[in-house]
Length: 387
Ligand SMILES: *Cc1c(COP(=O)(O)O)cnc(C)c1O
Image (cartoon, protein in one colour):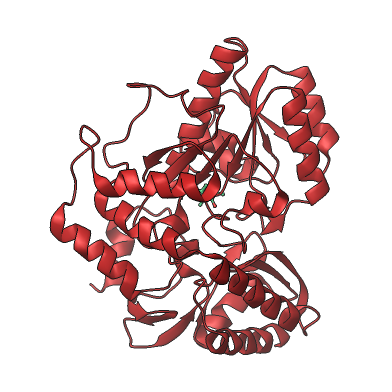
């Protein structure tokens, strides 16, 4: 049996995989088992911030791998401590809890909101307002937090304590906050899985005001939008927000699993010894890699992300077969006249690997993609969309 057949036989059928077996790559190029090269416009769903086999990241990971691979959270380890420090110094936040995925980072945020609500408002103040069309993960609590029925069916009953508000009409958030006992409101500033939809700035400002008025924690899910993806270190910075908690994962790992729940002043000391944990959380190898990623997301790189974004938007807006371009930074959704699946298949044929989000073609290239590689990808996307 070849790899595709073994996978089909033995790996749980939860993924509708593209018919490509990736065996390696370098930078923004990925290679399949037949030796075909592709321009990477998906970065493993926003993970490979500096592409594949990035030398600096690899060196940071390898050096740590040779020294200490795992110790558990019974002990202090340097990469974990330094990464938490770096996250806080870069954002003004106060403390970090490390896990291994976006869903886990959100689970921790939800647990923190419940404990905070109980301690500060009363035991019945456990509800978390999330937005329609949101995506927060696949575990039972984050599934319930996700405001899309399509993900819920088959897994009822949902974990209680979530209320879904309109992602465009802030008066709906106000109504839910006034009518229910709530601990927090949680949002993605750009709804990624929901179709790469950036929330309106006025709406977000209104939600922040409502959170203040009703004494709700403001939680921002930066799992996909974070770590430079939208042209700011974290996407809430595009909106001038001060979250009480933000969560991140995907790009922070740069290729290894990591999740981080980052606490502000009001939430820094909510979780105490024994209230939460994760065996692998803060793993030294993953943390050493993340520390390298974070150290390179400087203003120059972020300005480059914004410039490359503008380049893509300018080239695709109004192009033949393109109905519109949405999103922020290098997190873009292309509404195409042809079906997204067909566009993606043709792109693969032409040597470009992109993603889907709802009915759109989604682009999440490595942030380090060169103008040259980007222009080549754009040319192919324009050609395929116009077919
Ligand atoms: C991907 C994603 C998650 C889930 O992350 P996993 O690492 O797959 O658990 C949660 N929230 C958002 C916004 C995401 O894009």
